[in-house]
Image (cartoon, rainbow, N blue to C red; front, side, top):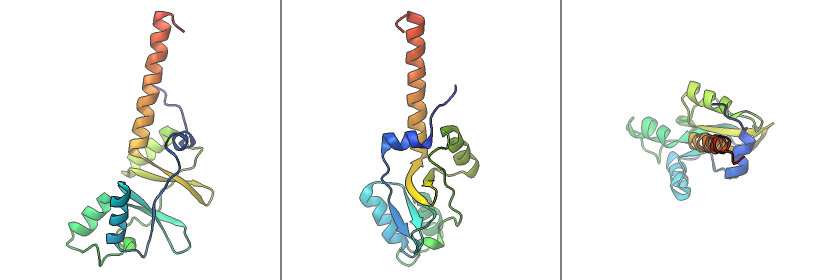
Length: 148
């Protein structure tokens, strides 16, 4: 099945709301922000507000809890992957799927040049693919039954 669409299409559907934390924030503050907004990841920015990575609940559990560290004493920069993996609004959905699969990540900040304009998650991609499949099935039903 051919999956159509771009990152921009997903952002049109879901919106561009993003939640950020700074590299010098404590993990406790970051986890608190995730809990407050019922989200599983935060975009991490440096003091110049440049995107440097993504902090996830997985980072917290594996790099703080399982290592016996405390979230109040650990800074976000200590547990975040150092290279931000991002996508552009013009990137295709299939590109995002490949990046997420190859890099074993679930969240991609969306950058338009140097400007953060949103984030797409694995859940966003799955919803898009499911909607695309539904549309294809409806189209085929219409063709088979002569209603199109």
